[in-house]
Figure 1 (cartoon, rainbow, N blue to C red):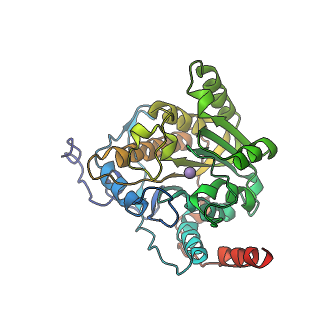
Figure 2 (spheres, rainbow, N blue to C red; figure 1 turned 30 degrees about the vertical axis):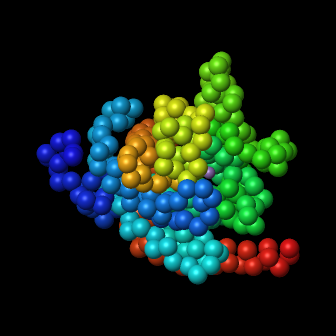
Figure 3 (cartoon, rainbow, N blue to C red; figure 1 turned 90 degrees about the horizontal axis):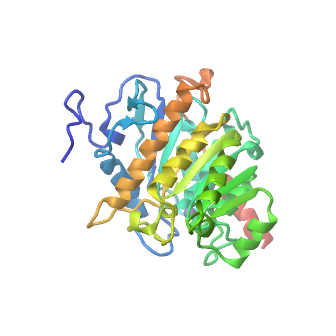
Length: 346
Ligand SMILES: [Mn+2]
C-alpha cells in the first residue's frame, strides 16, 4: 500500500488525501454526505464518501494544470460526516442543508462527497446565503455531469428522489442548468428539456458517437461563456459504466475519464464565472475492485486542484468578513414546510 506519500509528511487516516490539518482558517472543506434514501437500483451510497476518502490515499498530490502538489500551501479540512439524522425525508433534507450551510458562506471551497444525487436540492438551499447569491438563486448556474437527466416530476411517488434532483433544483429557482453525458431519460424529461429555456443538455449520443468531437467542442465552448456563481455537480454515473461499475445505476455509452477532467478544467477556467462549490455523488464502494471510489477520489482531487488554480488566478477569492467566524447554523425547516405545503395542495 501507499506510494511513498508520508516520506516528508505524515499520512493522516480519515483525512482526504491523507493530508494533515493545521491552522484555524479553512480553505477547502471536504464534506461527507452518506445519504441513501431513494437509490433505485444498486445500494451502498451510504458507504460511498468514506470509501472515497480511503481511496484518496492512493491519489497523486501533483496537479499538472496547477503545477503544484496539493494542498499547495492551503488548509484542507475533512469535516466529520453528516450524521444521517431525520425521521422523515423532509427532515433529512433539512438536516443536510443544516450540515452544509456553515461551509457555504463564501470563505472556503466546499467539496461535497455523496451519497445519492438527492442531496442536490438541500445543497442548493444551503448555497442560498452565499455572498454571490445573496438570496437570489436565479444567479446560480448548475453544471451537471450525469447519465440521467434527473428531471422527473417524481419516481415511485417520491418527488425528491435522486431521479428528480435537477428538476427540484429548478423548482428552487436556479437560473440555468447545463447537462452533459445524458443518455437515460423519459419522454417527460425530454419535453422539459425542449420547453424550459433554463436547461441546456448535451446528450451522450451526440458527444460520444462517431463524429461527436465537434459537439464536444461546442460543450467546452459553452462552458467558457459561463458567468456568475456556478455549482458543479458530478454524478459519477455520467462516466461510462465501465469506469464506475459499483455506482447505483451504471450506464454504458458514457463520458471518458478525460472528458470529465476537461469539463472540470473548463468550468473552473471560465473567465466570468466563480465556481462556489462542487459535489461528486453516487459513490459506492465495491468489494472486488476499488475502481469506482478511486475514480470518484481522482475527480474530487481534480476539482480541488482546479479550484486552487482559479483562486491563484483571481477567479475566486474568500469573503473576508467570514474568515475565522464561528460556524453555527440553525435549520429553517425549509423542506419540512415546503413538502407539507406540496402535499396539502395535491
Ligand atoms: Mn444523477
